[in-house]
Length: 280
Image (cartoon, rainbow, N blue to C red):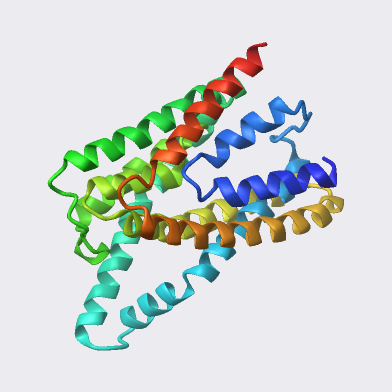
């Protein structure tokens, strides 16, 4: 992998991990379109993969540090009783929403990525992702549940359902953040609240994925020479992810009525265009 390729992948990771357009789908499609001969299953690729995810997770933690600080403070007995109850409730929701991804990911992630991880199929599912985003917006518009519920009013069933929506992202081309946001807005949260909850539950999931990759890295004997471009790419991915998060939180606050539509159209066009291009 050249330095330019590493930086391009890092920027893609920082943007597409958080935008509802599927980072995994882009990671499968873009190298194929550009004819890059990168073996993403190679042990030499592991340091790069680990640091990219670590950079993204640190960016999320940095952006939402006040949320995590207040949740931790309340859970540990800080503030008044109402704050303590709310903090513990939201932390429980985060745990419940991450459980489906942890359990199903442990059982089926490798199988699903092998089954659906070819560029052409990823392109098809990117189109499916666009359809899901549009359908979610349409269903939300018809739903009486679309009443801008605060995150703290969610119950255990809401959290599990959002977590199950998130699991669609094990298929390359389906966006984790997009699926989680659609799950949230169908449970009555507005776009900004759904995005915030999606990013909060993403943080422990990405850290857990990084820890899992580091275990593989420990046993794979990856070359240490790969760490220099990997660290540079991680910094770029982290900066890009932080900027993407800041943009999206402002965007969702001011585009409540049609927030997912531009991303859906992009997925439809890019997915269909990539599918056609890959068969030419």
